[in-house]
Image (cartoon, rainbow, N blue to C red; front, side, top):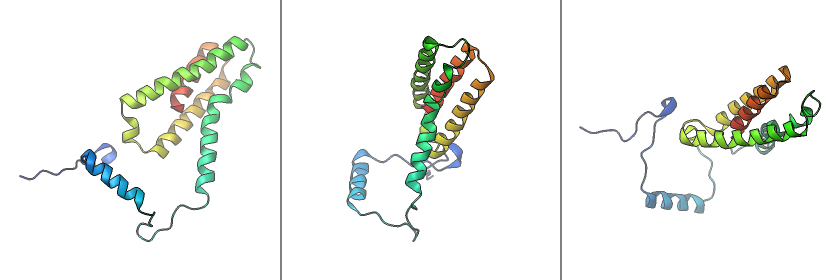
Length: 150
């Protein structure tokens, strides 16, 4: 019997069979040499695409630094707590990058969806920090923000 070379991958999308490296390299070179073409008569991206991407990146990465502005105003938090919380965001970022890589999340979920969902979860973790002045709670939330930023 004949077998299909594709199967249903994550989220029901067909998985493409891997092509040999030489074929992939030739295909990439041909695509790079050809000018961009419109597909199915559709127009290219509109004029708001780049400003939207810039704003999304700014809003997403502001999760990293925004709480640093208010930490000094919270009773019991000083310079050493601020440095620990900042370091924990970086630890979370490294851990998140590792976990996304190990579980292949970026291969299974489209980048815009992953970016949007993780930005919202990170914003939620930052917002939860408003509910407490407990350092351990803040440490856990800021580490999760780092994971979301990955």
